[in-house]
Length: 252
Image (tube, rainbow, N blue to C red; front, side):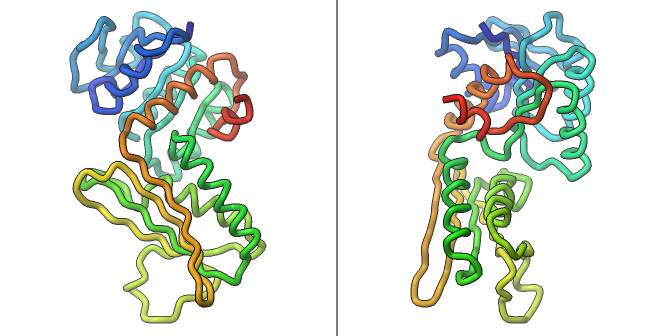
């Protein structure tokens, strides 16, 4: 039985994660962390990780980048694995995550869904086949409350495509600021924010007289919760290191 603490327990994703855990028999939520919430289930909700009265097997964080330092301190002090499902981390924060993974197991990916990770694999294959003959553009759509742009998932997809190309591409986020023809060595990134869109990501390979499109749509945040709980159960028995969805899928 994997004992899980949910950071951001009272938010929408925290509640989704709790629902997923309650539907499984291989894990349980023993506590929540939320600065702005109160207990809503049988487990206690505390304001900070330092207030936890029972050591968990894993902490799942679906809160905000500002919680990272506190979580890393607790994890490193107590030897607790972390599933980091929050997006919007700075380069400095990503560096801290990588350093912490030298001492404790850390599961980090920009997107917790199986579908997106399959999309990344397909995009890498397409990039290897199409090479520099096609222009590559990535379009991502999210709800109007999302703070970061482009999304972490869009960057993950761009990195996957870029890793498959011999000539590394530059990411172009703001095309209207430069009046010039598109170069071959670039990947365009476009962000759309509106309504309650959960998450849509599309990769366009635009060539001469044809366009190839690879696309993923998330219709519910439940898919992210399922992935995060799978990651937590997977991470419990692992040694220190940085893990992602590819590692989890390799064991399925």
